Image (cartoon, helix red, strand yellow):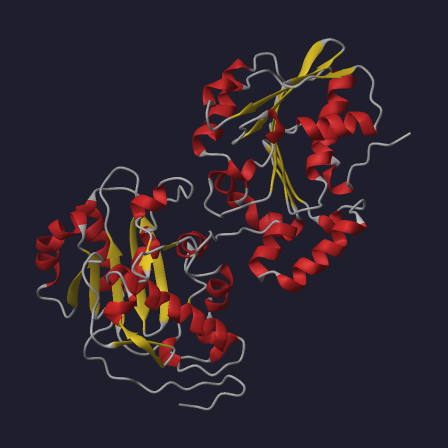
Length: 474
């Protein structure tokens, strides 16, 4: 007779009542099968009804019905009847299935259910998440979430992982009066099958590190198809100046991506030479308040140059910048990404190498040119970290003291390349990024970092001493 087996790390899910129970982790951890078995046991022994949700469920095939049906069969459980849209126990509905994205109000129809189970919960939207809690009001009711974290700034991660991340990473477990959260992976599952182990070993050898860690270890994966800056490059650039012995020298450049009230945040970045000291955001206030905030931060950083996005509403802020900075020892520059490229007729250069095409022939507009300039720095730094000599002026380093570095990663590594009929490099616009299938938030901090790649016309090249093994001092 088959036996219900639960990984020891997930036993608290059965033993400890909590309003929110969350299991996160990578492939082969056993979290979905454990949730299925627990819900089946609860239906048999306690009469608990479970409503099963996914954010996207085009048909019943997308639901967890198949997992539940397989476990009923494997465990030879009696009293269950399986239909194409529900599972009954002793003639009464025990499990029903819904998609949330197309009909969030459908949650309200789950009257009489004591448990909600959201599978693939990393995809849940803020709207859906907001609808679940007030709907389930029965005493001792519970909402269970199982999934593999996707982006660090997705609604699920922000609600159930980020606030408790330090303890989760330290102990693999977090608990308070409201939450029980377990981080579980393949090495916590005693029943992890050999066939998956072979696949895991193959993936570890062949996959990019960030993708492997996401799939098998439940780490964030802040990357999209056609991204111009992979997660591995971003992570290798964190504190690269310390790893490679690069001094903070050269011009201090501050940049600002403005926005008005209505959802988008305002972004700000500071670069000292090739070290990014600060990237931050302001989520409240109108464009004028945001500009005051950015100017104050630029002055506090003793910036030599202040750059702001003057496309759209940014152009109306010039008088405010004039009034604030005219008598200050800081030059200010209006950035218009929609304009034609800088130094149009000069050959495009990257990593110290001159390409066959001019800047005008290479880039669609200035925004593409600047994002690619940032991308080239990340790519060069990735090579340098792996031991290749790269001119230090071509590198970038991100200070680990940047408070919002996880959100910055999510923005920078989710900038997609747009296909261009002329063969030029073009970056997807914010409007297109917000549409399906991407549905990405506006990268205001990312755009601020991009504008910080501004190159002043007259900046003396300063020597840089290196202590990296195998490199010669400049």
